[in-house]
Length: 160
Image (cartoon, rainbow, N blue to C red; front, side, top):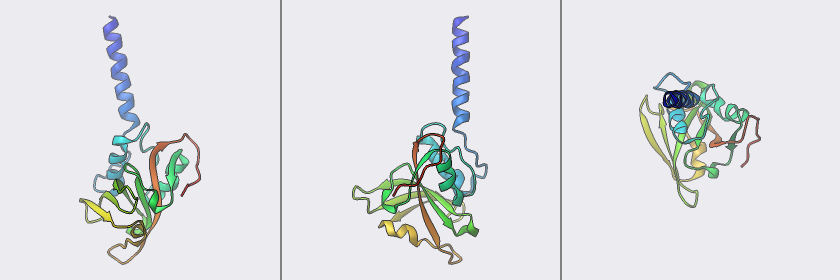
């Protein structure tokens, strides 16, 4: 009897934790779905707990208590890079997979920059983050990074 109760509690806890880090973005072809999946794999609970278009992620994550940084050189592996503008003004997000020790080279993994495929993009220097241009010539504006560090349920001011 005690074993059954313990097993029931363990199953309930596992289901609860899985639900806490679920991906709220149903369209698997979009950058938001892909970035949420990658972020949730390594971020602490509750994972991506904000919504909105990619261009809204920076502020929405801050409003939910996630640490954000604005300086292009403040990249860290596991963070989400956020751009506004472009993509019909919906913005774009990507997952940071590499940062050189001197913080001069940054690599992101992203979906739907080139169709609905996953691609790797290398930025040879942080200034290049502000030089992305959509197919129609619309420039993307780099907003910053969402770090995989939840500071609590409060709005935070961005740090460089």
